[in-house]
Image (cartoon, rainbow, N blue to C red):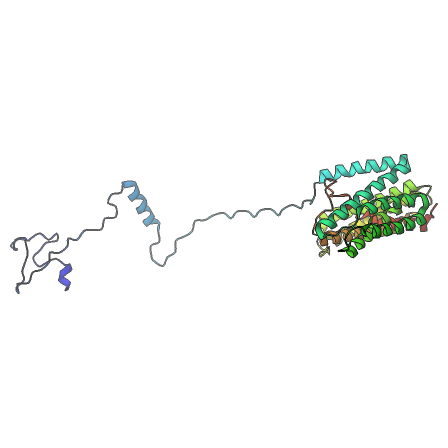
Length: 360
């Protein structure tokens, strides 16, 4: 096919009509007699065909507003950058209102029993010990398959607390030995599989909960025993509160990230400072023959023992893969989540008070 196949034949007009003097329409022959094809009419490109005036005006405006040259980039519209969102505020990990309400309720129960009838406060300690043992053994069974026998633990634990109040340290030691023996014997009534781990967990529970709680009942036997127990409770709560307040506001350096990521060194300093001030006031105004400088040492020791106790239970909960030991106390977790710092602090306070002012 030659080039003339796509063009108009000689003597034809723009639309293929014959010009003046040209041959009539029909098949044409060149000088050699070869038939040529009729040229295709040239149809102009009309992009606006079938579109209304508004569409054409919009397209025209778009073309006018576009770049004049191919290598010219269109300008992006100016826009005001959006302000960055404010950093999230620190929030407590628990329901603060529920925690305060439950704390006030527990404080009322403790104060009412402590200063009305000492024996009633011993009953409160017994209830806390039994519930704590139930929470601990339940979590061990659920998470690790460890069956520490609850019945001998609960009976022996209650007996240990009462023996510490009635017979002092000697009674507590004897009750502890008998409770551990009862755990060994009780577990013999079941198949031997897992016997060693079950009785080991049982003996650990005997020491961890009721034996340490026995020092609270032994503090109560002194003439100013109610004030000693109140000092013990106040210093532990103040240390915990100081650690929480200072750590939440200023905490940046982790204290033990593998055990408890929420605890900070700043929080520990807050616990020490708050507890030392509270200890000086308590020893000066609540304890017979107490001195303010003794309170400073007592507060320092309480802050250390309370922190270690909290970390110790955090270690247990991390091993078990749980956040709280229970759900009995809204905003606090379980009883064991409140006893974690109290239990290891009790023997520390009992010993220092005996050294500072005697056991009387």
